[in-house]
Every structure is written in structure tokens, then in C-alpha cells.
Image 1 (cartoon, helix red, strand yellow):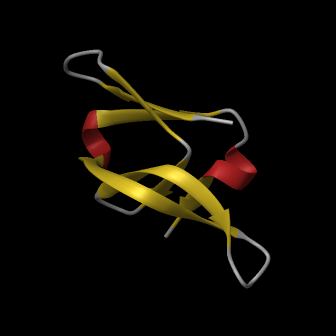
Image 2: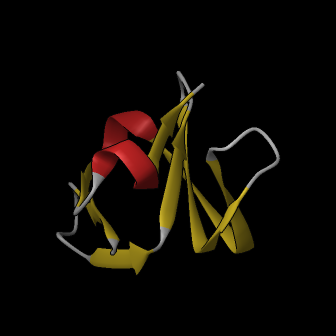
Image 3: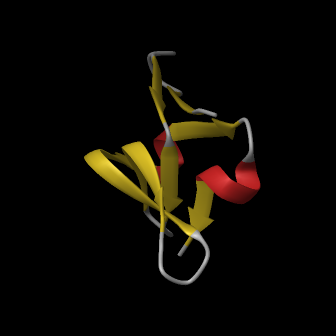
Length: 68
């Protein structure tokens, strides 16, 4: 299970376990854990990227991605 974020300008790839996508930002977390509602949430170190400048790819989008 992994989420890969590629920066469009440089082509650099950054890998994490969970991504939270907002209208203007993408938060990439180093860990993933179950929450009380039966879903998942990110934990650990968080990196924030502007959503227009990155491409997000996930192995299992139903678990690893969340749109807010």
C-alpha cells in the first residue's frame, strides 16, 4: 500500500501511506490508521503540496485517498 505524489515541475516522486485531498492542497502522511467510524485517517509526518502542482497515484484509492 502506497501513495505516490509526483511534482509536475521537477518530476520528483514522493511516497507516503495516505493522502488527504482538499480543494487547494494535498496532504501526504507517512502512516495510516483506522478511525472510530470504520474508515481510515493519516498519522505521522505530514507534507503539504499545492494540488495544482502535483499528480497523485494510489495503489488502493478506496483506503489510501480521502477527498475533503
